[in-house]
Image (cartoon, rainbow, N blue to C red; front, side, top):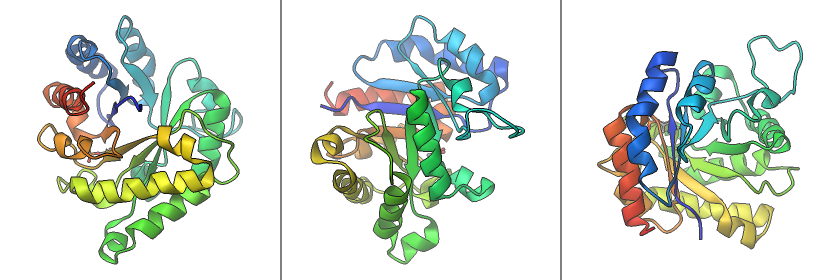
Length: 253
Ligand code: PEP
């Protein structure tokens, strides 16, 4: 039984006071929904304040990125050791990191490895871009991302995978539930090949890309989809709460 999981990626939005207000606006209602795990991933500078604001709730905290070295001359970077004890989760390899900051499957691999070593739970993002999608290459691209990013890593027990087709992120053009299910079942199969079936059956795989309160039911109703990584809609308390409520209802937890 995989616990459904909804994580909000706030991206580069919210000042520290805005981040605290956003979490306070959602905390009571989210806490009332049992058996769906939720997490918010604010910008680095708000992590401490949001952690404080989350006290007394089960809502988890995640970072949006980290570097793979523990410390050193890497100006502007944040290390796994700095996040350890502060966050539960860390998003790794988000397509915006790949697109604007040159992250590759190899840096994603190093980051996943470093997160696991530090006891952080990686939310590893994979997904094809528009050209790859239009050329019918979604499955090959995603499979390659997975095989490279998990290569040489011992079973990452706390791994969460987010399938985020790049063409669906922030565009308002979500995949269909069926499309997402097809790729996500392939992801599960690939993970089984890398590790084993028992691990693959337990690993949580999320869909991400223009998820809202209007379309979440379509995704969460699919057999292999265990939740969502939500960008834009996670900044709107009503939307995010509705996404979590519907997840509880559809998954019948
Ligand atoms: C994301 O940032 O991971 C994301 C899926 O964004 P959006 O929901 O806005 O498409």
